[in-house]
Length: 129
Length: 358
Image (cartoon, rainbow over all chains, first blue to last red; front, side, top):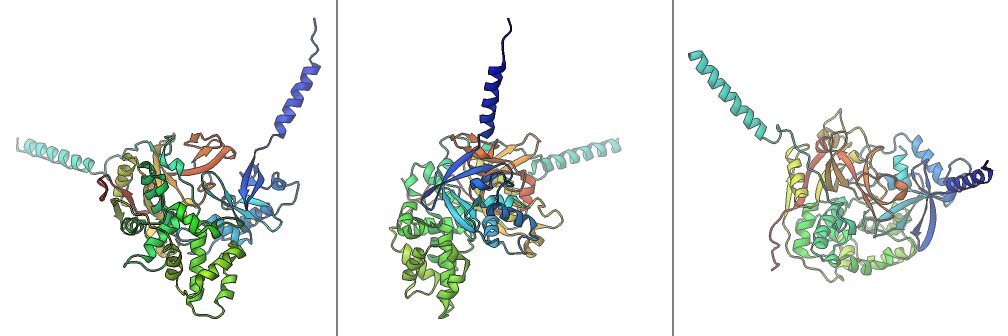
């Protein structure tokens, strides 16, 4: 007896497609609103959804990443004093706006917001160097 | 015969010298005891936020507040935790040794000041600074301190255009107009940082604390005895605050071509304070020390640095497997010898009586 595998193969194909579309996302509490961010493997960080793949759509937050990669040097000697956080300072230097996300329990997570409103974790800007 | 006796004496002398050298910690092969203060599900560290000091020079206050709060949580007094901004305030403005500036300080001095002067709890600080900390554009303790400091700086210059200048200052862009109105109200008749901070914190019912004893050490870079202090603190199940070059956190260079003293003089070593929360022997065989920084829960050190995290499901991973599943990074592992070269001192709680407690 021959078993027709075609219907099963179709099912396997569909389920793998669904799996492929799965993305990591998380809601952060920012400015009193729940903000949906997605994980970008490219920058290994949380970004606004349009920035996820980094190539298909224009995204201000990823432009900040590119800018920081081109900066030479990022900081002048002695510019970072008394333990200042380089990540948040880079964000300000690039003209981004720091926004504070509330996480559990009371941890302080800063995102850098570009002029188009898109966001990226501030620490990712420092890692981009 | 005579020659043989001399040979014997020489041998005995050699044995004595060798045993003396081996007995001395700097010559003995140092062990790397495995300690991870985050590992226990009921660890006080699990109940403490991962802070971000942003552009404020408050690392010392954050480090001291974390050591202090660790003790309070451990003692079951979670409600008695100090807020970092209150820790900075009590040090900068309530002592004869104070230099009247919250930006920059010493963790040990803060801890002594908390013992002596009492402090404002996290809850009370939230209430007092609610205007700044809640609603749209909320500010952290560090940002509020930065805001006050910059405002006071402008006002202190007795410049009629101080307010205008302040609006151009970086701190302005981080606060809402509501905060600006509030701070303007606070500033009426006040021209110094001290007056501004005191006008707020004098409204706080001060929490007194039983005297806690802390051991302070340091002076020069890289003294191997510092590792004994780290071992001692971790063995007692407590974190230790260390002073070190902040560049260790974002540069792979570690000043190999230059001594940290020279790097400090040249502005290439910015002194920073953080707390150490663990030690382990990595698979590579190197001894690593975990530093819990105050640069937010997404800080992961220089590229490739292994870090520990708490996952979304609340599981603790000593080496985070997947950062997209991490709720927060709670510390990163640095090679011990590299850290020691960049380390200049520290402070930690020592076992003993809490004076004032039964």
